[in-house]
Amino acid sequence: MPYTVKQLADMAGVSVRTLHHYDEIGLLKPTRYGENGYRYYDRNALLRLQQIFFKQLGFSLREIRDIIDKPDFDVLKALEAHRQLLVSKIEGLRQMLVTIDRTIRHMKGELEMDEREFFTGLEDERIGGTIIRTFRTRSPACTGG
Image (cartoon, rainbow, N blue to C red; front, side):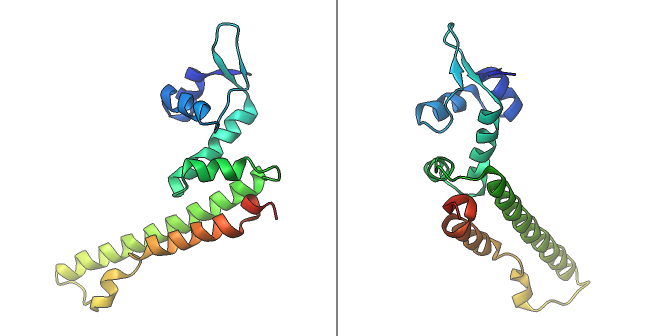
């Protein structure tokens, strides 16, 4: 079933203007244009838009376009890598919550903490950045390997 730009925007939770921008920069071209000038998107375009949400993991739109435009880009491998990045981020956030909870208990006098423990899990951004850099340079989804 083809979707109009408005239908796709509503489904994906983005603005029509965002989809127009993606079209303008060559990131997400409509599958076809109707005689009325409307943009229409098919299932493959929906899957491509899903890949564009890698920007939430720190990728620029240019990097995303370069990755997903490679002839040997593998959507399944990319989804698996995307999933692993999210799992890593979730684990880091869980550790941060544990540290915050422990710090609250420490400040209430309920728990002793070593000062180094105040930062357990808070270095997650550095770890996450390493994961993303590794994905960008080594992932089969990005390199076609």
